[in-house]
Length: 252
Image (cartoon, rainbow, N blue to C red; front, side, top):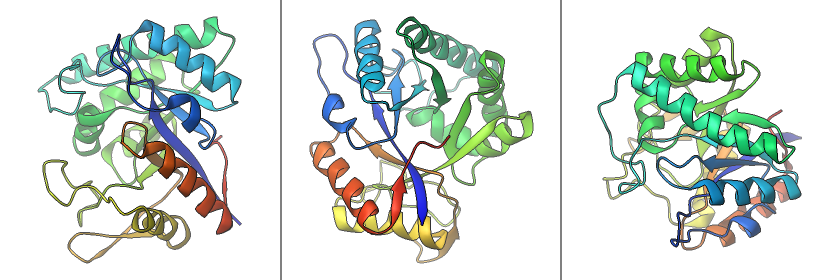
């Protein structure tokens, strides 16, 4: 019997701008990565999303991103390792405050968007993020792209890490995600997306865009909460994994 954590990026509404179906998607995942106000989210949205996750017994993680609301945190910004440390500490602190105030416990940290992808390749940036997480609480789990510099940095500093794979993204032969600027970055066929996930979990590899096999560890699977069919896909992947003897459980 295989098991995997199913996580989703949530809490991405902002002010009057509503995004996603957080309350419904939480019925189908085991962990929630909640935006901390820099790329998306605001204090009210953070509080409401934490409350929803606690009510549905879904593990709570901080989802710190670039200070880039207009670009949804998906634009590369040339920040120094010290700046990365500072913005990660700031954002974890914000979400941890709400989680503690509402009687919950922060379980993990997963960087968002450009910050995540830059740290996957840049050891200095990855180390700064790992150090920020460790400084807040060394018991927090650091989520990062499987096989990336972020996972290596977390392990080196002594954090527990969760190697993450993506259901709706294609991969390059070096294990990186295909850039969103490329036409083939996203997998839009739900059946293909879930088939890729099951191969990664059960067989330990992903088929790359160069038609090679990249060895991969799948501790946790990311689904996105901001797509037009996000709720339908959450239901589908939950049901299909379960029917194929893959239990959906929190990472820890």
